[in-house]
Image (cartoon, rainbow, N blue to C red; front, side, top):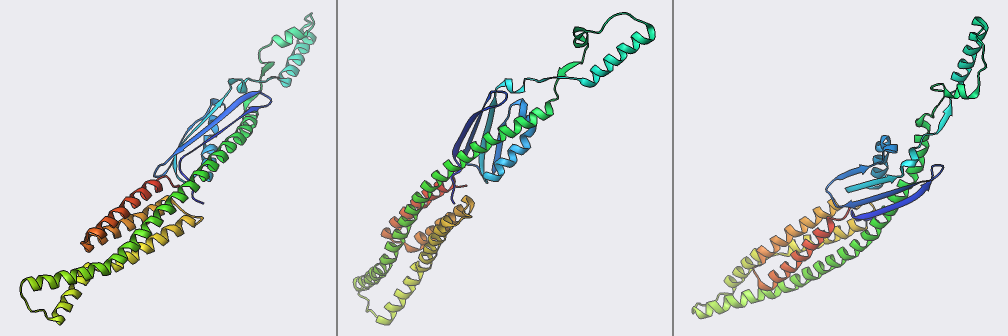
Length: 291
């Protein structure tokens, strides 16, 4: 399916248990290659590689700006008790009492006041859990981006088909003009001979007309131009359609049109050729937005 390189995807959610709001914005514009600029919050900055892989699986080409905003409360530490330190602290206290006969009782406040007994829980597990939830929201934003690109891609297809149809119509008009043009050249030749009071030799005239016909013959260019139109429409319908391929075909169409116009040397055909070139330029402009 043809997709546009331009699009927007946005998703937001509240992440439990932090009750933090995450907002994901993705914007794409046309670009020759795939280029991603990702701005991630510190809490998931270490997962930028995974984010890039997610984007590459959904988008083939374009300049992409991805921004994730996350409340700072998501990184609030969870306090935990160091049970091993508590056990060692109690054991050593009793050993001191027993060995040195030190009087006094160990109470809760004394234990809690000892450095390191209560400390923030290791963040690795929390960050992993946070990333898994953020990843779902990023995936949702990517889905919405791709859907918008597909909608715009469908509009591009309709416009491109319409322009190729105009090109085909103009080529048909050129083909119908060629025989009339040859008759005009033959009539002009006879008129010139008459004005010069030169006796016309039918065989010589036929040879001259044949020579002129060969010089202005654009049948081959018309055939190739129509073939390129069919190839272009076929590429549009292909599941593997790409902007690069469509642009290449459009460039070949333009080259054939230039050759056709140079050989014809006819005002009516030249006007049609200008129409065709105008449509091809519009096609090329639209193709630049195709992924």
